[in-house]
Length: 351
Length: 120
Ligand code: FES
Image 1: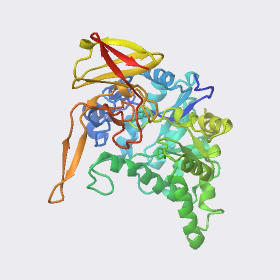
Image 2: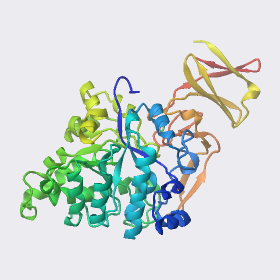
Image 3: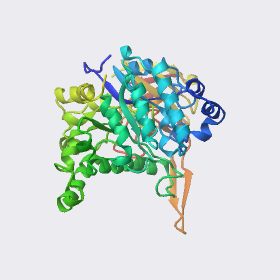
Image 4: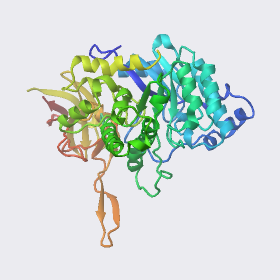
């Protein structure tokens, strides 16, 4: 497909799945529970993403109805995407769900469903292993069970509302399992609820949505770096999704500043927090678009864009980015565009 | 510059629009309360099909004497929202409500012998 000659890997696309279909892959009693009360068991978010019809997705079933597998290649074609890494939409709020056995049953069911019905590596359709982070030993077993499947490109931590933060030793079994299976970790942020954001009382969806994604990324990035996950699991690769790029330099220099003064709190670290962060990968969506493009250019420089950024559409969500978000940037070289649109993802994921 | 016949007048009643192709350009021709406006169907944000969006009024908010706010529609049906990400534009001016320095490309529309013609 490609756009202007560039191969495009979309490192974060979404699929709205049918609970009926997913339930076929679940065991009782969880199967019946999901079938009878999916929307009470799987949390959703509040806030009108589509603003009374100002935003529309006429070309896909989302958000009204579950999508069909054929809608994925159709969307790839429309967008000019060659390879997609797909995250099932109904799992985005998994972190809010407190019941371990049900969370485990849901993750097992969703993983098996995605691998059986959705992935198709020959057509460039991949997914990730989604794990119930409140149960690390079971998460590890799940990674061992499905992690070798050719349709699995990473382990995904759906990171919104997840406590303790993801650098905690509590998660050791999950990181070990990912490392053992040769899979990178993708931290997928969310957390945009109007009614139960960290701080209640925000009055518009854009307020909590703008903050939620970046807050959860701040939280887990800080924990992962300062608790030395890269030192404890040197075989792992780490990618963070869904907050644009300006948050990255802000946190890099903020953590460096604190670390210079308080090294004794993180003696495990062998280099500056920002140096660890430059080894990580960052999804580009939703890419900020300052009118003065120099500002964006400097942000690209600060995060070492050519080596760290991986293009993502987040399609079909309300704030998706088409590939032109990158191909149109006048300050990027052809080589940098190639790296951001495909090569960095190619080197990061297990395709 | 040439005039391109794109519709009979009755084809686009008030509140309606027609999408046309002229010289390889996709253009939305709108009838807002009897006035015709032709806008290029390319959003200033990421090039989305803005002229296919839904119509709204211009929502405003005023600060009341007690410092609470009151939201109201100042106009009706003269704002179009781009279906890709919701950027809103005032049809008569083509300007983006959130930042009026962004403007959709506009073309003149003339009515001649019961037909609408776009000039470009
Ligand atoms: S392309 Fe029109 S709002 Fe984004």
